[in-house]
Image (cartoon, rainbow, N blue to C red):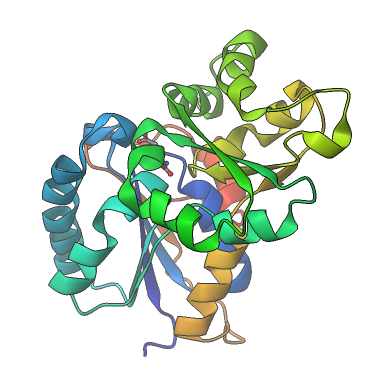
Amino acid sequence: MASFPTILLLDSGLGGLTVLREIVKVRPDARYIYVADDVFFPYGRHSEDAIIARVVPLVGELMEAHRPDLVVIACNTMSVSVMAPLRAAYRVPFVGTVPAIKPACAASKTRRVSVLGTRATVKREYTQALIRDHGQGCAVTLVGSPDLASLAEAALSGNTVSDAAISAELEPCFVGAGQDASARTDTVVLACTHFPLLLDRFVRLAPWPVNWIDPAPAIARRVVDLLGPAGSEVDAAGAEMIFTSGRPHALSQALMPFFDGHVPA
Ligand code: DGL
């Protein structure tokens, strides 16, 4: 394994930055290639077959160009569709991002959990199987959001996103009598990597407080399991951000915090 490993992350847009920022904390010495497949955004509107046909060759091209030591699929919608075909096609280690149903159901005291993802993620058999295998008897409500990922992109790009637009997408997550804290949703899985970008707004707009489960720290731990902990020296190679559309990113200030202060090339 290279002493400064190259880690490639792939998402449909800016959502995977919420995974990147956790990985950068535990491997600040690695070189990062962040790829946003904005040509195909939003993934939540595509079929499983279309996602497999898009992502498997794209990852092959990216591996050829960047020779990563590890690939993180920093997108739930991709991961619930394409992890098995990717692992069958390529030898590099992959880490996926899938809905954190097991820890959410283990943590819920009211046994009422909601999974907030894209429409595609909540429909997939992979997600249904996670509930069957790890639901632990909880009542799990699946909420497929049509627009939150686009709203999160807009907000991070500096555009105004109204509270009403966010509240409308959050509302179906809150099940049960608002006044009876023992019989209402107490845990919401953030099953789309874009959603933690709006977490402050979610907390403020929620009709009652809940525990929001973001899988990114667990993904960072998995990366350390596979690559080992950070070395003592910090790599000078830094980070690169690529949009498949070829557009330059004009967001250096907004993106720097995700890259631990590095300006992505
Ligand atoms: N970030 C992606 C996810 O985690 C979804 C956004 C999209 O629809 O492209 O599911």
